[in-house]
Length: 354
Image (cartoon, rainbow, N blue to C red; front, side, top):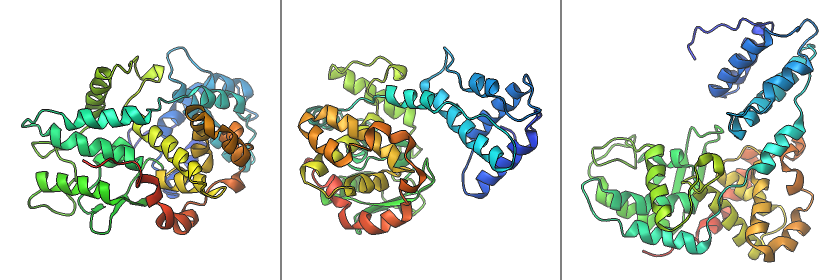
């Protein structure tokens, strides 16, 4: 959206002030500004003399046939936050139906790889034929990094040489989706792969250079990496039916990391409450609710853990999307308390030796 865009609807002043406030707090608010634009246009078709009417809220957040479910989720989330902003400024506003957002969350069921499938993925990556594109060097390391740290593909591809401190055995993740910079301890076996990649690709380099570089020293694109990954899993006979049908994708490695990590920590009897807080911090989630959704997936993938999960978190994961504000994770506090202490326990078990 252009910098000189002006809202024109009945809430033009409030929308501009709301977005400015979010950005002062450090939020990028780029995609949200586009959503605000759509709301601004739609609002001109309604009588808003007494605030935001329910009819406007319902129409703005109603799931349309050509939408992804995430589109509705983003609209409901924006509408909920903006409505609260208006109410706090003494302007009446109907609130979106939380049940609609909850149904979107419940319908989301990411693909979780089995341990055997993960091993097979690594084996196939190791067997890539050498070529000038250096895919045989990149993918064995890149895919292991995603699975063993839970990084988003874009986060991994944006790592610089300075971010990957192999001597200190840690990775600094900056400018993330949720604007939570974090430092991740990594295991010695993953360090070995990263050192091998560094030796193969980087001679003379600067701290600000990207860690992962193409053969012509350019930035890898997430889309291209996903295309390769999909072609790989198809050869494993894992069906791919497109993103909208929740098929496996490169992002599934992050989902799988979360579920497999919870499995490991629950088997290891990590104290009640620590597993979720640790994993939420490690993955850069904004709140425990985002991590809590994986509890049910873990129970489904590993039925032997169902009773333990229900006894430890039975009052959490059925209603994870709308946890009270007071139980949301204070990121910096949890990071200081648990990340450096037990972070290695997440990935130390998950990497096979090359």
